[in-house]
Structures are given as C-alpha cells and as structure tokens.
Length: 229
Image 1 (tube, rainbow, N blue to C red):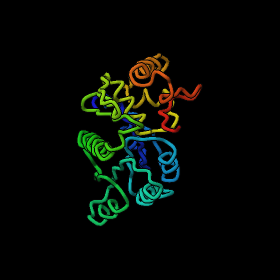
Image 2 (image 1 turned 30 degrees about the vertical axis):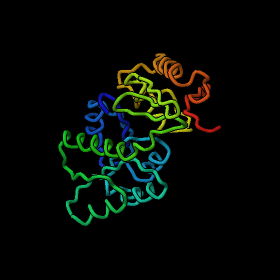
Image 3 (image 1 turned 120 degrees about the horizontal axis):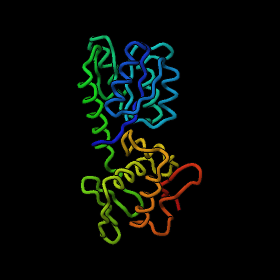
Image 4 (image 1 turned 90 degrees about the vertical axis):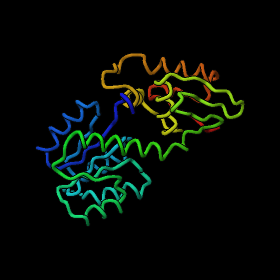
C-alpha cells in the first residue's frame, strides 16, 4: 500500500480512547471514520468502502461479534481487526469464528496496531488477486503492467495509473466518486479540487480504452469500469 491513504472505520464506545487514536492514525496517513456505538457503526460498514474496520468487542447497540457476523452474512469481506480489553481465549475464538481477521488487546502500542492493520489489508488484497482480471485484460500490479490477454500485448502503466485501475477493478461496475479514488490512491496531501483524477483517467483511456467504452465517466457522479455489454 506504499504511501497510499487507507480508509478505516473505527467502532469504539470509549471516546477517551477513540479521540487520541483517530488523531494518531490520521497522523500515520489513515483516513478514519468513527462511530461510538454498534448500530451506526454497522450501517457505516454496510454503506461505505473501507480498507479495514477496527471493531471493539463490547459495544452499546450491537456488539462487535454480531456486527462481524452480520457483515460476513452479507458477503462484506472488509478486513476486521477486533479490539478488546479482555484477554480470554474464548473471546478470540468467537471473534475468529465471526469472521474477524486479527485481534488486538487493549492497551495496545500504536506501532503494533498500524503494523497489524497494514498486514491484514495486505493479506486480504493478496487473497483477491484473482479478481484483477476484467474483459480481455489482466492487471499485474507488481509490474505496473496491463496485459491484453487476446493479443499478448503488455501495456506499461505508471504506479498511480496501476493503483487507480486496481481500485476500479476491485469495485467493478460501480460508480466511484473522484474523491474516493483520491482518498484510496493518493495521500492526504492531494488536492480534491485538482484535475489529478481526470488527467489519469485520460492517460489510462489512451493506453487501453481509446473508444471510451470501458472506462466510463458518469457525469456529476464519478467513474466506472464497465464490463457490461
């Protein structure tokens, strides 16, 4: 994820813990949404696209285990890092059975927390590498290359073009607002009013979609990688 901004959801009812945590994670370059109870946390996790959910086990409204179960039942596979004050092995096992990807106990060290977040996000990306195919193309992120599987042609991409296309493949046939692309591909210094996204869409089109049939602009809403005929 080198240098990119990850979008996290923190669901934690202890605001004394949450406030400094949000600040610290923001300083690390994470974009953090926050919910202080289970019901609103669950609805944010259902509506928005996150790279990781930091989920406290004991919450008012709906508890962390139920949130995890509900998300997994809807095939929402966002990586979940369970946060708890308890050290009992039973809770860890229940958490993993409910679909949590990893577990951290309070009080935790911030460096360890960020390392854990990055590790589970990376793992979940690796698990989805087979999804990097669309139409007659295959994206090879390690090489910044787009392969045309019909002709065998290798199209060279810049790192940003590659990251942008990867994010669009992972959200195929969904309209993605420019701000969301900025948030996931650029760091927090990116200017939301600049033409960065527009320019990169233009250069990507030149490389593999000169007819503008695949990489669509949905006016006033964003961009879509379209695989529907």
